[in-house]
Amino acid sequence: MPELPEVEALVRFLDERATGHVVVAADLASIVALKTFSPPLSALVGGTVTGASRHGKWLDLAVRPATAGSGAGGGAAGATSAVPDDELHLVFHLARAGWLRWSEDAPTTPVRPTSSRGGVRAVLALRIRFDDGSGFDLTEAGTRKRLAVHVVRDPAEVPAIATLGVEPLGPDFTIAELSRLLAARNQQLKGLLRDQRLVAGIGNAYSDEILHAARTSPFRLTRSLEADDVAHLHAAIRDVLSEAVATSSGRPAAELKDAKRRGMRVHGRTGEACPVCGDVVREVSFADRSLQYCATCQTGGQVLADRRMSKLLR
Image (cartoon, rainbow, N blue to C red; front, side, top):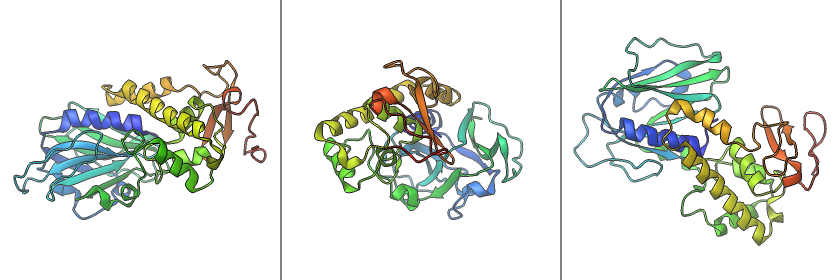
């Protein structure tokens, strides 16, 4: 699943390449991907892209319709800003198996509806073309179709955006704010970091990386952290995400997945050596996901039990 660093890179990519161009086609291939009906998807056609932005893991392409007034528009990549009332927003979440595929020479052949069942192979969900011939496809692999596309006048109309928590690379994410979040409910750190209603943009992969950098267990309870621990966790969040954004920035969309995998120190590296201490990277598996950690760096040498086989050790 694309997380904050990859989504930020995609936003910057789109902002650079699409801003100022006119949408000449918006073709839906998967009816289940489109979650709104008013304004219609066709309202984007003829409109001019005024910018791209990000809301957590959501991408937002702002479009001024052809019939709109002449007021000034324009969004800033990676930030949510005020926009004119007559602007529309193509807002989408790539979910677990979705992706954005850019083409300098987008296909002009008619888009055919795709099966909602899908499979391992990525299938087309939506195609957007611009007046210079370029464009992008939104695709999704797998049988569980979760890619979500909305056309709205205000991104806050999307409930998942309206309820997003603090932006971890923004000015509001202070040590004091993190302390407040940690104290609000006594839960496991891994769960807090992944909860989009608390901290926006962090998912399974980067929460593993952050907790490894902070040298703490994914199942440590939030209210057990002392002041120094909170400061250390705050620094780890900022450092890991900032480094990943810097690594992703400027890369073509096609290279982002591989860049993310190469940058992981523990996530997805079960059985490999921890780059910090040399111990083996271990895994805890759940029904539909898993986490990776280093026992030496994070749990004082304690091996956490795999939930598929026994009760989780604390």
